[in-house]
Length: 382
Image (cartoon, rainbow, N blue to C red; front, side):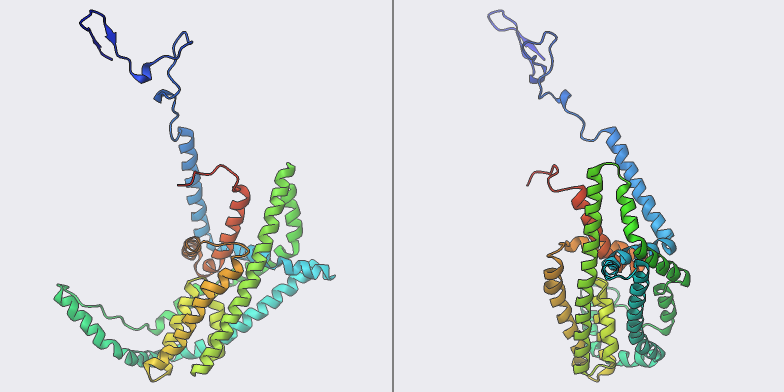
């Protein structure tokens, strides 16, 4: 604030906009647009709440990671039990007691899984016993890439590279046992999974009622009921739809392997159907398996690549047209969200976490839709 004296002798005082007074107020108050009236962007209490929520999230992730032996079978059983609960309700409406229906469903699913594992395990054990011989054959077939690699090394040397491409040794037989130990859960985890699965399916109706009646408010009870119903319906439809699609992929892969002359087409088809339950990673792994088996089984490079390329076309159609068209009608899944969920749960719980990533993402989206509805305050459109 400054003052100056004009020629006429009157003193003029210049007042800043933030210092003007509101007329009618005896004591004087700043204008509503004054900076002193603006609240801070993030208050201290909000910052503390965000920090505590972040620490809680880190603690939960740490517990899930280090207590994998307990939480993975339990979560797997709860998710699978929710998927299979509609089948138990169907049997119950036909006069089958729910406990007996749970045992029958788990027995049937276990039988189907054991049959698929047997189709895959027999050729896998045979090929694993011939790994040194198959490795030598594969290395001989890959000599066709010696000239492109040599050209690449020359180009790298011309542009100033000091080292060429490192040699990639073929995997040895020592990787088989650690891989099986990583993929195979212990007997205690199997027992915990099956016991939790049967008991969960048998008592799911009572658990639903207890969870709903735990809320005293009527609106909260109705919201919980809608959430549980939608989770059960969506997970059941997801399991049925994905199973039918994956069976189709397995059958198509087996037919392609039989037409192209690949060894053991039934086992390869069963492996394709099983791996397709794991998003992104499963089809890539199956494509690599078909390429390796084709290069070993066929004398020419073109013959070895036929089955793998055909499988790539099938998975492209399935992933971009069939699955989005069918599942997208029920619940749209963002590709980035699917990928991040897959990466997180695979890092946390391995292959079983990869299988659980999509169902857990569906549960999270349903909770978000009901707890954070679209008619809540939203940010303005950019």
